[in-house]
Amino acid sequence: MEDIERRTHEQRSYARWLAFGVSVGFGSLVVSFVVYMTRLLAPGIAPEQLPRYWGLPVAEYVKATGAPTGWSWVMRLGEGDLLNYVGFAILASVTMVCYLRMLPIYLRTRERAFAAICVAEIAVLAAAASGLLLPSP
Amino acid sequence: MSILGRLAVAAAASAPVFSHAGLAGPSLSAPVMAWWVWPILLFITTFLMGIVAVIGGIGGGVLFVPIVGGFFPFHLDFVRSAGLLLALCGALASGPGLLRSGLASLRLAMPLALTGSIGGIAGATIGLALPTRVVQAALGVTVLLIALLMWWTRNPDRVAAHPADSWALALGLHGRFRDPALGHDVDWKVHRTAWGLAAFFGIGMVGGLFGLGAGWANVPALNLLMGVPLKLAVGTSGLAISIINSSAAWVYMNKGALLPILHVPSILGVMLGARVGVKLLKRVHSSTAHRIVILVLVLAGLRSLSQGLGF
Image 1 (cartoon, each protein chain N blue to C red):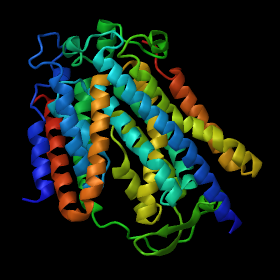
Image 2 (cartoon, chains in turn red, purple; image 1 turned 60 degrees about the vertical axis):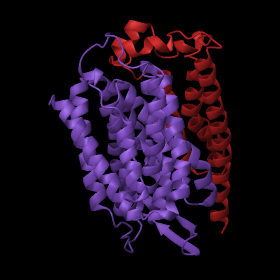
Image 3 (spheres, each protein chain N blue to C red; image 1 turned 90 degrees about the vertical axis):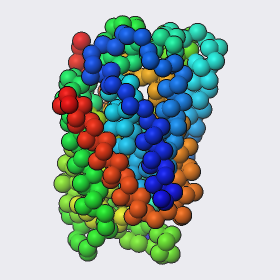
Image 4 (tube, chains in turn yellow, cyan; image 1 turned 30 degrees about the horizontal axis):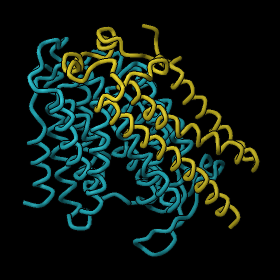
């Protein structure tokens, strides 16, 4: 019984953090897309120019348009199209934040296997987010 | 014609036939249609896709990549990235509800998602390094195999009694959930855990490579391979996708494969369509929906294959 209660608590805790992160992520995505489409912030690439480039492979697209790779978009958030990256970055980060929340719970209950899985997943997600896993061009 | 049949025809009609720019080399010619037509067409197509996907019992990503990759002008690199993020958004949005209701198990998802995440990163990295034609042909073959798998597993939940294996016992992969349809609690445990971990690595790799959501493979792996009851398998699959696709999504984002004009209308369209689909679910026979989804997958798979082979 205690085991079931503990698992329910874990799941609810994860769900609470997930729900909050998802709301913030979706909210950012919708707001930034409205900003982009209404040109409240000038886009780096005007939408009417995009059909010339969206059929290119991503490497050629980046070369032709100067679109950001890695985290360089953070320095260009004044561009309406790149502002959309914020929402995507939040949505792709929510899971890592939830795992960071779960880690102390597993450490406190001395569940070493799940604490280790948490650490490993956080490391995998952080490595993917850092861009370090990408082969250099 | 059934409601779903009419929707499928409408989705096909709304998807414009377009010479795939990604396979025709650099496309710096003058655009044929005004730019703003595309996000509107995408929204309509993905809205219908969202309805059909929910009623057919699959994620939107598996329909999105072959259909948008085959009939819209965006390069497959961007379409795969959008498919992956679309599946991620759907899984993230449903995650809290599934966890609170107990229809997904966090403990079951965590070890499987770890191997899936590693596979997802590997798949996304390989996919972005391969020539487009190779990816397109492989996508066609994969989608046809998915259709075959969906046909083969059309009567799932053949879970026989089985003892838990040593891995499952060590990780405590067992529990109880309330099945609202049955009106009572169902005890569950898993077996073949090592095979399950290996399967999720492979599924994650395919998902990352092609930008497909992985519910089509996660659910049979959990249900038929590991012996998880179907309802819990469906919920846990969604939770696992939200973890696995987060890692692969970063690979595409870091490479610059993010086109808000493609990604945002598609995500909004599928998510709104899924909400409508949930409401229509009670009025449509699920076996009809299943057959229509298989038919759409076969057509989209054949188109992908023919594009990849240059026919």
